[in-house]
Image (cartoon, rainbow, N blue to C red; front, top):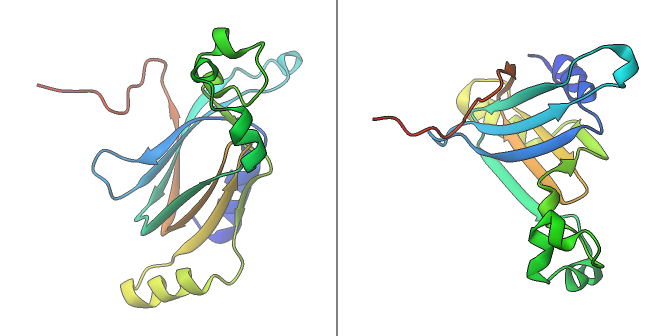
Length: 158
């Protein structure tokens, strides 16, 4: 995908639910698993999507929460949605993050330009803002897949 196609794919999942992110089991590509929904009145069925950032040479994640919110969110009951729902603090147990303010390409990224020169492939830098984390990636391409129900990214085989 070129930069405008990548940004269009980013715009498609604005304010949707990020349910998991991390390196693929072979550790080269970075995956984001997204649950995308539309207003039920549209008749559009929800989808599980995998956004695979190929040849990911840098992935960094930091907390989007302030120290004050962290301090209020240390209670272990907050990792369980039922136990934490009525407590003050960030309820970690909801098990998803809102993709807000969302995904964006970094214009004229010097780091991406250097990787492009070094490897002879186009590279991009993206920032992903959620209500829980801020993720920064440097990668070569984006592949978007619709996942079937029951997809298990880390299934163990014999």
